[in-house]
Length: 406
Image (cartoon, rainbow, N blue to C red):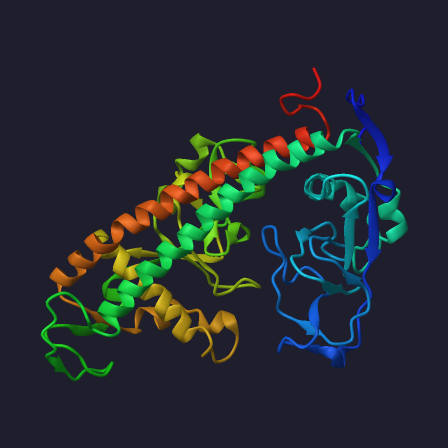
């Protein structure tokens, strides 16, 4: 770690002295299963989430076993990812298990997150970046000598993570509610004042008075722009790239910018709240996100399409329609992925067009849900920024929790 004055009441040590470190060992492949036979097995970072690892695979022939509340640390590409286990588990060669010897496990978790970049810089290997158990044990760290200060640091940071988790769970609930309303109205046809009168169409029976149209009637599919890296500046107008797509939303962890003056040259590439973006080429093809308000104003980069609703009054209905169409057709490609994601293919897809009164009623029913989701996303980003600012300062003693230090 970088050289700096050791805070009063802290000590310089190594990870090997602070924690018990268990290097993973993979069991035989035939022992893997998804039926719950044995104990959870984690090979690498595939199941890593924000804080707690998800259970997807089990093994009935465990090799290296770790106890509940062990911290998993990825030792192969990508090196340095950190997650907690909730259960007794088996870890494979892609992970190491950390348990603090005399201190706070929560503090150790955040300490490991803080030194992730340092560990990456000390990893080795020409094909797969990796770090050995010996290298892990020798990494120097500074830690509070007093257990209570470790606990206090962990509590400050975990309280922020808990608030983030609660907001994310609330958003999942709100999204599910909005999706349920859409399904009930436009799939099951149980919408307000439904008469039950149906008529035949290209999409099967639909309510009388509705019709089948084409996607091109309700949306324009707009390309992004290939902004040049030499035009990037440290601050200014953010550019949304496909690397910013994360689990259905946009996360600007490593943003790039154009100057405000330069951005005025690209008025056709400005994004709006709740624009629907789709990755249409490359490794992330098929990923889609809604544009949250907290990133705006922002510009649309290349390798993605923006499905712009022609009538903003129907934008919320269109969002569900876009998602439905992507899910329905993304697995039916013929030829290459580039060949499948053609604008003419999407423009000519059959869609259900309810009457105007139903679409306005749907907007009124779900728009407050979308507003709350957007407010939560903004709050989540604020909390994450606060946490990410505090984490390196608290885990190195640069700033102290009230009641400790001067």
